[in-house]
Length: 109
Length: 115
Image 1: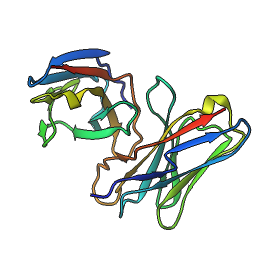
Image 2: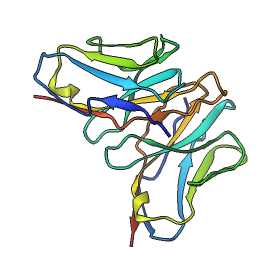
Image 3: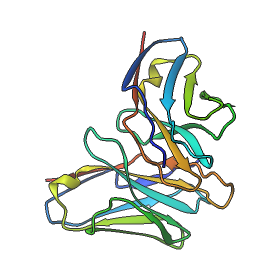
């Protein structure tokens, strides 16, 4: 599975958009980009995933560059409850999740 | 919607004892994954099962074993417990047969403390 690189921490003002970047320059053509988050020792929560097209759901948007070497998770209106560690994971279909260090997002009032 | 259920939520054991963690997947899900998260660490994959057969294996100690039963629930058995086994243990489930990308949904975890 391809390795991902994320900034260790980010801050965001409440109500503003949070843009979390992820580099995955060695991604293969059959690997998906998944985003999970973990709020203080709770079970990781699925957010969104994509292969090459941009994706949007009720939680977030996922923007994947055309060469697929990087992506950005967008939380459009961050709230205090979005404070968590966000993991960008590249995996083949039906594969295990390999968690990296993630980005610790702090949403501040 | 029903979620993944794990029991017990908290477990305290002495060194060299055994522990059994249980996972009940989301109804109709056929695949179960186990992950271990030590203090201050990221979750690490242990083992997975699809249709009651082991499908993948990670850094799982030989002292640990797991299986998936006919009703798709899974149990992680841990013997000769060591202090370093103290961790959060997460179970995740997915529906492999439905689509080509199986999203894993996690349970709340079992916090194991070994004294």
